[in-house]
Image (cartoon, rainbow, N blue to C red; front, side, top):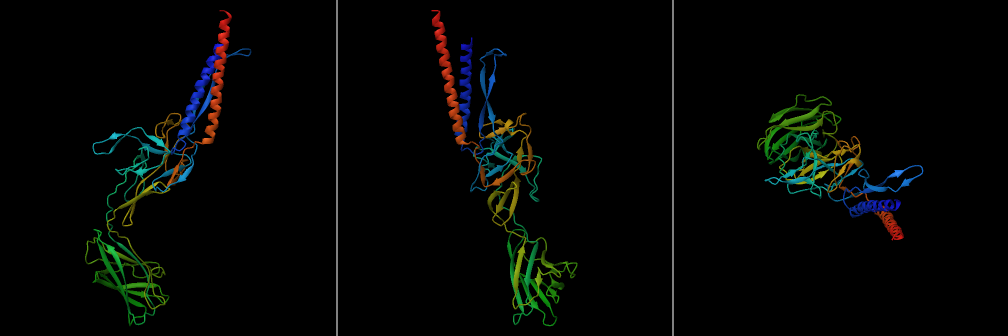
Length: 429
């Protein structure tokens, strides 16, 4: 009987609109949730009987329509560990299922994915988001910084001290005056570091030869104690043309002249815990970027650098737009601790939703492809930024009104069908 069919159809309409209400309420409630992806509702008609001349009332069902691939708005933050993704791709994260006896987390063996990039360091040095999920990445070689891309592991930052770096190379760029006047001896100082990070003071002094034109004697000393000397000879154009006559702990290079060759000398410090000689680079013979002798009456120091450092304490962690997790130390050293890759799916809308804005791969989504940012369609990383929900409130409110009207209309159909059934029953009583 069509009245019963009409009532059943209207009841299914109530159920379908109830499902739509649920999805709308979920979207509105999460309109400010970082990385949230909205859920829309699709409706489908189910038939009982339909021919050219006859149609029986059927029903309607509601199914979820996911919008996981729709970009949310990106806003800047002041947190150097916050990350947003512009384009496709997801962060790989692990969910904690408990803690081991030493306080380290026990992580689920199932890989999860998210767009919620509000990461911070927890008490154990792990990068976690506000939901407590652990960001996975590639570890890097401590010497080269090159990522090891065959395995994803939770990123953990060590706050241990950075060991010292012994000074092995010094670069010196200066102009010795062609006309020094009464000041025939000039000097400059520099701090270097031994293998234990202890600071040592070096002094370089220059005395112009009174008898040999365009020749200076360079003396190297450490904490006031002489190490040795070497002669510097300049061409008529003011560029360094050769080195020679080394004394004490100073050693000349294999090639002591010749345009374009390195103008280096080396010396061994007399005190401190130095394990190797220090190479002093003064540019190239015939070049104008190292030691020169141009006009002037005083020493002009253009640059003096060295590659040693003292022991450094942990000072902070940042993530750059390439996904490199960079640890900084008080001695100026930095270290690439890890790299954050992104995971791309052939059908992101086919991912299985989980709690905390997480997803899991399914047969519909396909297996995730792990790659560096801006590779294989993963999208790019935006640092110090977060991706907001992709929910548009005005659109959801419009859908709410439509769902409310449809729900109300279905209730009226049920009421009308009930009245007609009662009239039919009263005809035979």
